[in-house]
Length: 576
Image (cartoon, rainbow, N blue to C red; front, side, top):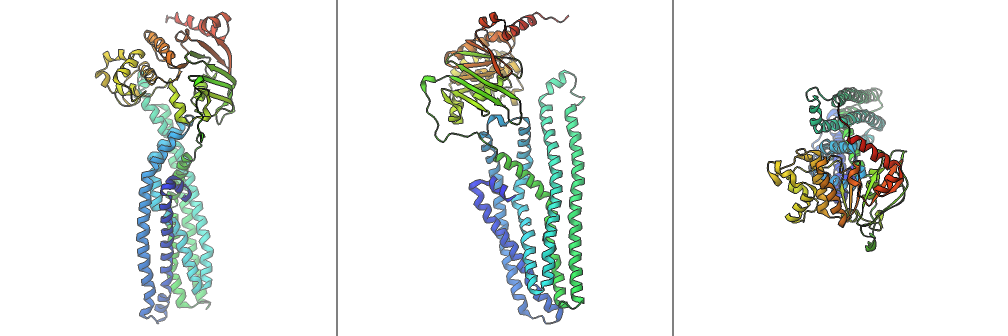
């Protein structure tokens, strides 16, 4: 837990946390010393020799312990405040450095859970959980060592039971942590399904499923309920283990002390004093047990947060390579092979291709053939297994992320628009662009046609994710962004999937405009939009099986010709 907290705090605040740890240890030691110093007072009280000087040391140590405790509490709250202020910043900074391939629905759900539930647990751990953990170790240890000087037998019994109690606490925490892990997995699934349910409202209602519920969400909630029940029973078992061991230890100490006194092995008055302090020996260990569940759950959240902060980033070159202007706007894959992490299915196998500057290249192929993977590797979502990807004549591994992304404009099938005005969503492509440039790009992409039926024209808010617009309208905005950015290289992944036929002319005009200044790579199933491409590459089974122009590929009668004829036939389909 301490190691993970140091990771989260980073260099800026780790010194503060280390100082707080020192104060926690000192406070726990002072408390233990204060408790042990009372033994002579109790002994004198029991054997009738009590004098006022016996109170001096306990009083002094009580004042010292109180002052140290105040300082320790102040340090703990400073650390808690630092954790609260830094953890979102650290997570945010980390997320922007992680490769885009790291992000998928599971990791997004985990990040959502971590930012909401996890950050609160982590800040609580810094202020309230580390301290009792340290007190549960240091204070009983000081008491046991102190008792050794007064009665070595009872001191030895305490030392023997301390690790047993600690092991019971660990076992209890382990069970509670296991239960929390089970619940966390199901809670993440519910979060993902809730987001999916909200986003899919149009589809569900279109098919009359708006009021009947959503089976995947209901199943996830049912699984979460079962996980809650399992969590409860496992947690109760963990608490019961620690409670039983604690009571056994307390009983054993009292019995041992009584036997030592009755058999004349120890001074009866001193033994009464030691037995009076036995509760103070057990109490810090019991507090560890009381906090065991919270400590383990916080530890789980810390582990998850540390996993994100320790996630592998794509290496950045210490000295970025200088660009070769003779290869500007050029993209090349050299003998590239790639398998997605965590799988054993090779997506690309020894693929080589070249996109000449200022040309339009189309990627065509069946689903799963590796088309989208090509664009992701060009944008360096992942590292290739073998071969090299060159952008602007330079290996992407020799460029910083900022350098690489400055050369690329990406248009994906799933377009995300921010909850802002239509104008600002287009301007995102190049925030420094003038209004005239924004409007020109919008006109070229067909966005201007949307103004006739939008209530506030350019100032219409599009909703979170662009929910106020149709899929085709969102695509037009995304293409307008690419036109506005005017990047040397444009990657369009299924950008034509939601475009209706009447806007196909806008798309072709946009492609022509983009290829005047940029190298364009298009992935498209709507073959009519890429018939004028300078080069068409056909992918199948991770290999490029055909390449050439539209007329040439039709004449060859291969896979591309088969796709083209199938779509021609489909255009004549009618519902009878």
